[in-house]
Length: 255
Ligand code: 13P
Image (tube, rainbow, N blue to C red; front, side, top):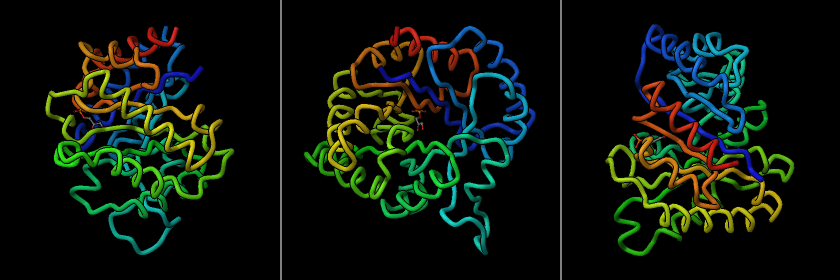
């Protein structure tokens, strides 16, 4: 039985003041939630303040990106160790916005994954096809490439701590979520490819979460699918009440 994993990716939203106000409201809503692992991913500037505001609560904090090197002359970049020290326990890697807008590759994702694991951060590795890739019948091929490249050389002991997020690009910020059956089809395929890249036990333990226009109205139906182990939420994760509702639906689906 995999514990549901639900994360809010705030992207480039919220000042420190806005982020800490959210954290105070959200932690109060999470006091009764035990059946899910819950994480928020603020922008770097608010990470430390949010971690302090959530200290002692069950809610974890994630970075939205990292550099694979421990330190160095990389203007504008942040390392795994810096994220840890600022209070993060998790980091999102290879989000489609980073792949599409900032040129991230599967090899780069893999380097970041190893840096994260080496520093004790739980990586949330994003994969997913574009509409063009889906419509032209290349979805499985793209997912295979992203899994094989992104998860290359992961130690078996680390496999259970890796979270994979299936985020079809056509569903992100569009209001058009994957249908539960479409998500299930992709998640089952991803789990099979993880088994091939790692091993069957690692694949069975790995949480595969769905992202792309998750809202309180569709979260329960998505979470009910057997290979959907949680959600990575963008827009609806910016409001503490709607994110809390999505968490509650994922927790309910697990019991
Ligand atoms: P939306 O929930 O806004 O579609 O964003 C999904 C996403 O990209 C989460 O990482």
